[in-house]
Length: 205
Image (cartoon, rainbow, N blue to C red; front, side):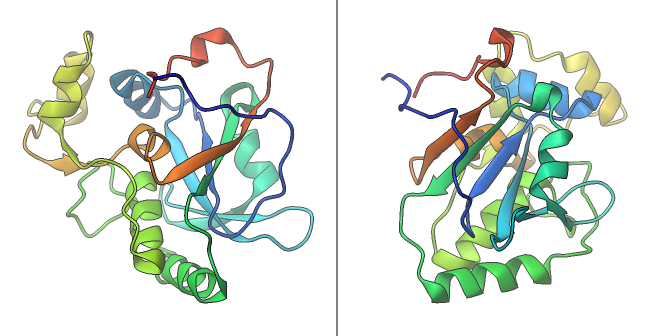
C-alpha cells in the first residue's frame, strides 16, 4: 500500500497534533534503526496560541513543554512531521488532553522504555495523553523480542550494553514509529523537502 500524500509546506498547528523529530543521541538513533523509520522522538501540541506553539514531551530527565521552534531545532537537519488525529477534537477533548499532559509534567524519563514503569518516555507519553483525552489508542504495543527480531540488523550488541548484558525480551513498549504509522492519525506536514534521502526509510503502509 502506498504512503499517504503529505505536504512539505508549513501547516497551522492545533492542540492534539503530534510532532515527530529525529534526535541524534545514540540510543534514539538505535531506536530509529530498530524500527526502520527516520523518527525517534515525538511530542504533542498543548497550546496553539501565538506564533510558537507549545509541545508537551517526555524527555530526559523530566517531562516538560518546549516551544515548537526549539523542539524542531533539536532534530537532525530540521526534519519533522506533523500528524493529526483522524477524529475531530472538540473543546472537551482539547481540555482533557491539556490536563492529561499537565498531570505528567515533571515525570522522570524511563531509559528502559518500559510501558509499565512509573516513568515516561516520549511515545508512551503521547499515547497515554491521547487515550485519556479521546479513548483512541495510538501505536502498537510490542515486546522487545518482536521489535528487535523483526529488523534484519537489530544491533543486539548495543542493546545488550544498554541493558547491562540482559535485554528484557518480554518487556512491552511502544515506539514513535508505531505511533506515526497508526491508522488513527494522518500526516499533514512532512518537512523539510530537502531532508536527506537516508531518512526516508519508513516502511510503506
